[in-house]
Length: 274
Image (cartoon, rainbow, N blue to C red; front, side, top):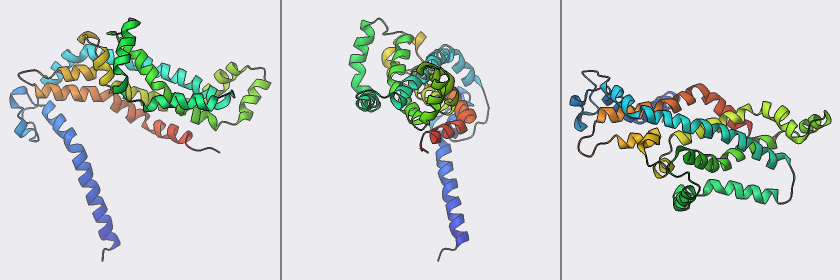
């Protein structure tokens, strides 16, 4: 018969094993990023670095510096515009009553379930027609549009639980609907804004498919595409590759470290009503 103490020991043992298995790939990446190129061998990747070297990080920064900048030029406007447009659309569908609003909103949300792969050909043709193909601005527009369904849904769920009396009080004070939105609703929307910002930042930063299809020139490609291009055709500098992978992961890691608790709070704030 398993005692309470034995059950607790078993649970902790399984938890530690799960953590070790989860962190082992990260250890391999970090360990080999600290090795000089001459010491990196596939058969010895888990062996701790003997001669610690930062040459991999130095070379990765040189090769990926422009691409890191491109990624920030991409995610910042996408995240901001996703918050702005998502808040407006979510507010309209939550508090403005008009004919067929539920059907239209369902069509908007349907965009969340369209696979990226199914729209690549029409997307490329459209971007080429409007002159945005091969430009970072085209990738920005694509992510803003593709992010509208999820951001609108998040804001709509949050605004749906706001009491109508709050909006009516603002209109009694002489505000129009737009003024109520700007001066009453927006100031109390911070939890959902943080959720959308984090969601869009991480998803756009880690995107590869849209980036590799819409940006052909290396000078405008984001970090995910440039990282894949670090692999040589003859010799792969594993220390540079792994250093670059860690560098690429740092921004999203920092976002979750400093804003993670707000992300959970924002999700919960729109999950219940009453």
